Image (cartoon, rainbow, N blue to C red):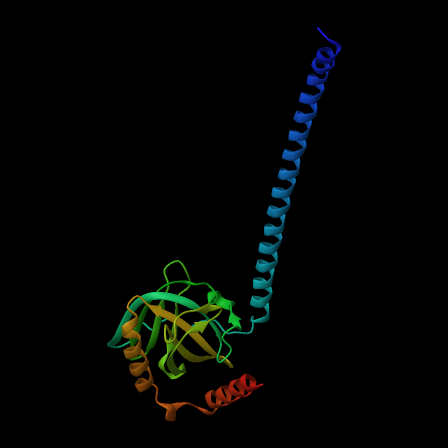
Length: 209
């Protein structure tokens, strides 16, 4: 056996050890990257959760949501679809999260003589009295959710000292135009009291700013 063969044979174990060491080092780096990414995702989620809670605290002056009356009167319209959230009227990114209004969910809407009954499986139901209704329209976005033009049914209503836009999407989008017409016909603007008119005026002024 030549000296070259002996040198090569003696170097092989060292090369194998170096290769194994390099592989272990690579796995350690990969694990470190994965852990770092997971920690970053957890931090972002925590910040979003804290921001949500803080927004809810700031909106703590919003009154409790009314329940549907025991005798709501005759049913005018019904639909099933999705509830996409609520915002300050005219400010489609100013999400309202108090009292569960920020939770997206399935929805069953029933328009009666008494008002609009919003039933949300898995989330909190609420009722909008006829006297609180202000406007209905078709729009494309609310609370960060954007659809095609006219894809959302937006209902504007007064609650406490605030005007609220709530966004709904019917499973059958073609029927949303009928909802807009029926709701707006139902809303008697002459019955809006001074407080309601004041709220609307203030909201429009803030939106103009």
